[in-house]
Image 1 (cartoon, rainbow, N blue to C red):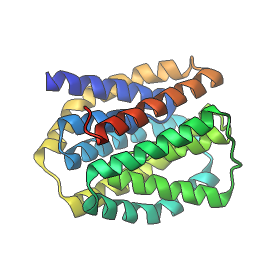
Image 2: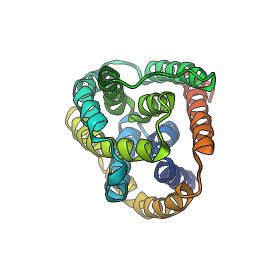
Image 3: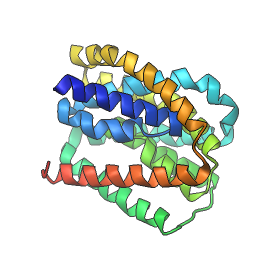
Length: 240
C-alpha cells in the first residue's frame, strides 16, 4: 500500500511541477513525511526535483528573467545556511506549524487581491526565504509563488524563472543536506524507483501547461497553497 501511495504522490507532483513551474515539493513533501523519516523525505524530494528542473530547463530557458534569477540566487546563499541550522535544531512539527501559518496568511492576502511591487530588494528577501525553506523542509516554492503571483507575473515567466532557480537551489541544498544531516540507501533507492513516474509526469504536465490560461493558472495556485497550508497545519498539530 505504501509503495502505491508513494508512486501516486510522485506522479501527481511531477505533473504539477511541469505544468505550473512549482508544486512538486509543495505537494510531495507533506505526504512523503508520512512515509519516510524527515531526512529521507526531504532528500528524496530534493533529488527528484533536481531531475525535473534539469529535464525542463532547456525548454523554458527563453522565459527566464535572468536579472531576478541572479538576485534570488544571491539571497538564497544566506537562506540555505540558515535553513540547515533550523532543520538540525528545531522540532520538525514546530517548523511545519510555522510554515503552514505563513502560507495560509499570505495566500489569503493574495485571494483578497493583495498586490506587491517587484523590486531588487524584495527579490533578495524572497530568495533568502526560499533558500531557508529548501534546506529546512525541502519546500522552496511558497515564497516564490506568493511573490510572483502578487506581482502578476505571467505564467511563462513564473515557470521559467522558478525552474532555473530550482536547478541551483535543489543542487546546493541536496549537497548541504547530505553533508550536515547524512543520507542512506532508502533515499537513493526510492529516488531511482520514482524516476519512470517522474518522466511520465513531465510528459503529461507539458501537455497541460499548453492548455492552462492565466486566470485558471492563478486559481490553481491558490488551491495548491491553501491545501498545503491546511495540510501542514493539521499534520503539525498531530491531527493526522
